[in-house]
Image (cartoon, rainbow, N blue to C red; front, side, top):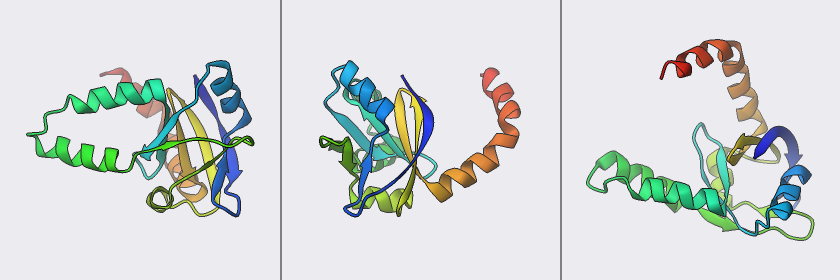
Length: 145
């Protein structure tokens, strides 16, 4: 559903413009709610409501008697927020999430199938540079699972 890499900057009020291609998908599919939370690797995850509810059900099913499940759910859900966009397709990212992802001004927005990820430009550049040379090796290892 979401694909590609887009470079954007936060405006003076800290708002991010959602890429036009993603906004067209929102409109085409009648999507009115998106959810944002702390992602992995110091990025932020954005989900449309349908995908968010799937994630929520999956993580709610984890046993709260397991310490790691409690820790994960606390961090994941305490960081969550529902976002709405204005007429220009801008969303306001909560400051605590910008801090978590180390986002200052420049943002890399990537589509990862069922979610959108927001990265600071520096973190994305490092992740990509570290991961790209091992892309084929990574592909072979995940194919074994």
